[in-house]
Image 1 (cartoon, rainbow, N blue to C red):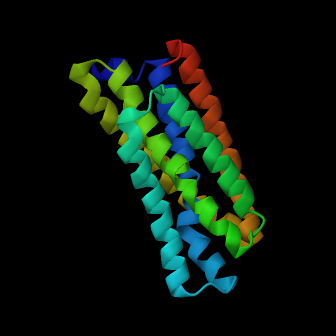
Image 2: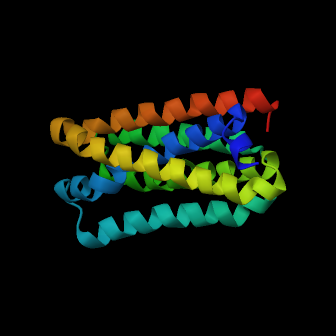
Length: 187
C-alpha cells in the first residue's frame, strides 16, 4: 500500500540519496552561468557548456538499457560524479576543465535519476510503483527547493567556494545509497 512505502527503510534511503544528490546541483543551476561569465566566457561558450551537460545525460540514458549495473550502484556513481564535479567547481577551474566537468552531468544527474527509478522498479510493488515515483518527485522537489534557498546565501558569502557544500551534500547522498544497498542486499 501507499503507506507501506513510507515505512520501507530501503526505499526511504534511496529516495533520500537521490534527493540529496539532485539537490547538490542547486549552486550549479543558480550561479554557474554567473561564474562562467565572470571568468570571461561569452554567451556562446556558456550555452555550449550547458548543452554538453545535457548531451552527456542523453548519452547515458541511451546506453542505460545495456548497463548491467544495480540501481544503487548508479546512484553511487551519481554521488561520486557530483562530489568530484562540485569539488572541482569550488576552486574556479580553468575554462579547459569545464567541458570534462560538464560531462560529469551524465553521472551527477543522469545516473542518479536512472538509479532512483530503477530502484523503485525493482523494489516497490507493481501496484504501488506510481505512488512511489510520486513520493520520489515530492522528495526531489522539497530537497531542491531547500537547497536553492540556501544556495543563494552560501554563494553570496563564499562565491564559487560554496560548491564545497554541494559536494558534501552529494557525499551524504552516497551514504544513503550505501544504506539502501545494504538494506536490499545489493539492489
